[in-house]
Length: 115
Image 1 (cartoon, rainbow, N blue to C red):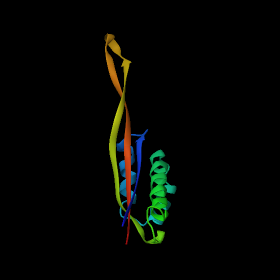
Image 2: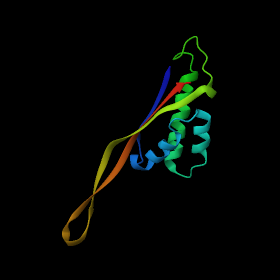
Image 3: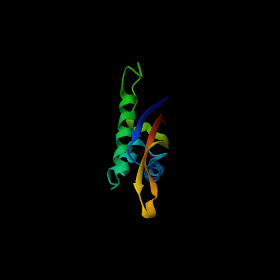
């Protein structure tokens, strides 16, 4: 049984979060949360929040009726970081020209499975 959680439109570039997702992919949930807790990056807080939401989905009796899931047997089977929409801003530069500034967003998807 798989339990999923998404954080959409996160105000961080997907390029900054992907290395953190590589750290927790395939880890047990407890270990993944411990790894992210000691990372100094802002993206680690977002991943941690999404993993906790997926864990809450696993323990919710409405989504998982008649079944108790042991949180120590859950692993992060999928950690997918996709690019989201970009805010485009124009910044003036030399000789009367303009440059685009792209404020990137990302979609974070975490899937937990029971071992």
